[in-house]
Length: 333
Image 1 (spheres, rainbow, N blue to C red):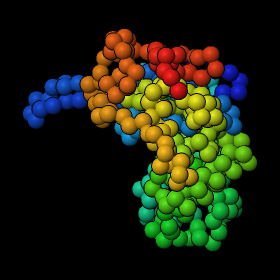
Image 2: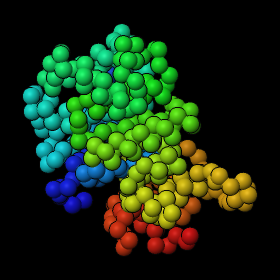
Image 3: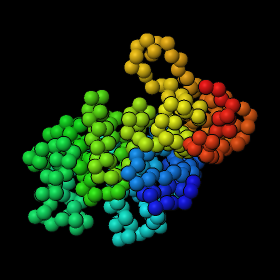
Image 4: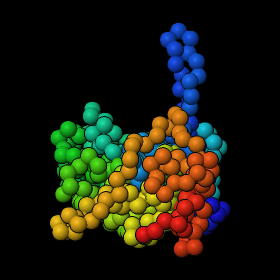
């Protein structure tokens, strides 16, 4: 990847997050390492939405939590506007972390059930000295209106809201400190389809109105394509394809991306019945014992012997996207 530019808000470079596995009751011994994130690199520009997709267990959520320092990085760098978050401590890290906020998958689990919505939204403002108690009420009302909720509802508790309303509250809390980057970790996967569209439209409008940058994480490409400028596809801890949303959706290069695209149902019943899906054999390998070479080769119909012994780098192709596959040029449409 290129070095950070003036229009880049987030730069991830060769990030690794490994968890040791220990076994034994009285005497624990090292039994392996879970390579949840294994050498990931990408950037997010100012005002850009980068979609991150992949199967469950590929490391998406671990990557998100590492960016906001809820999980420590094993190695690599996380730069926010050129400053490496992994090297900062104390007040410097705390100040920089206010520029990155996160929206979690389950809004009910991420909201304190003992706090009213007003207290929940006011808390980050008071903790970071962004408002006095007298001014906090006005800012809470503004946040509620921004996410489409009536300010009078701020006196209620999380259990008094629907799932979609709770997610709006979680989004409002993420916006309280006016961050430059928002990480949305599967923010609509727990919602009904009709509510999903509302939350996606809300996030898209916030990006436009506030100039936000966003890392939008999901396992459903049909959701990601509606909000993302670029899409990164992740498999077993690695990014295997990265390009514009149009390129990745309409002209996928990596075999894994092709399989994800083929799984998107068509709204046309006749087309849905006639199209052929690319069904992947087997299950994703264990991150404790990944296969040698390309991690996708046991499930890839185009794999050759070289794929079993060579780890393909994420290289830039002729059309500008980045693909980690040595067979890209040989794969027929």
